[in-house]
Length: 66
Image 1 (tube, rainbow, N blue to C red):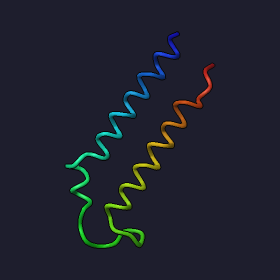
Image 2 (cartoon, helix red, strand yellow):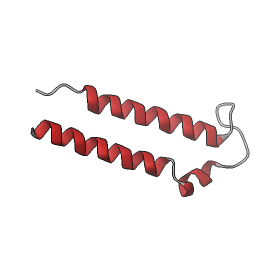
Image 3 (tube, rainbow, N blue to C red):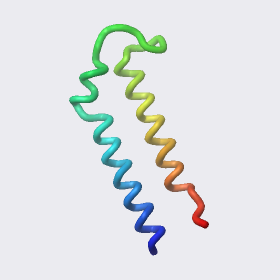
Image 4 (cartoon, rainbow, N blue to C red):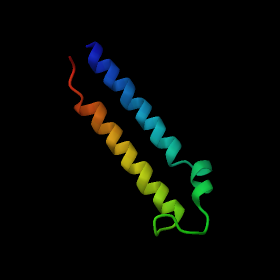
């Protein structure tokens, strides 16, 4: 029961982190000209933050309890 509640809290935090990553004020910082890893900075930010969120979700969901 306690484990389920802890996982739910972590998933709620990751949801809020995702909302923060993909919200207007942060996206406007990366919406500039130039190139980062051969692509516009906005696209690099979107792909990178999406990758981080997926990795964190996998860690939370697949983590074995002791």
